[in-house]
Image (tube, rainbow, N blue to C red):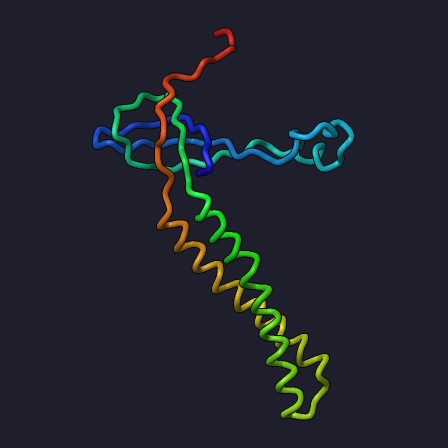
Length: 155
């Protein structure tokens, strides 16, 4: 399970809680972040936050911290749909283009490139649609109620 800590920003009396998660960049986690150009660019952009609602078994207050979990299988399926499907479509399209070139007696390089591009784009669109269906079906679950967050700011 992949786990992340979320902050409660709203609670509905029917048991639905709206949480906010700060999306983290992969930068600033290695020992070379002071000399890295990618780290500098990542610092220039604002921190992104994602909000969504899910069902809660316990009552929550605004500011509570929740530990959410998502199965790794969801991430692996999404990666397969987004990265592998277009590659497979590219190769299948290129093979179909090569086959058509022999039937129509045209240049095999051009037909393979065109059909490969069409196959890759078509598989990407199909994978994108399937990924949105996967996203709708997979919701995180609350694994722990961590209570109120501690603020170090003086107010």
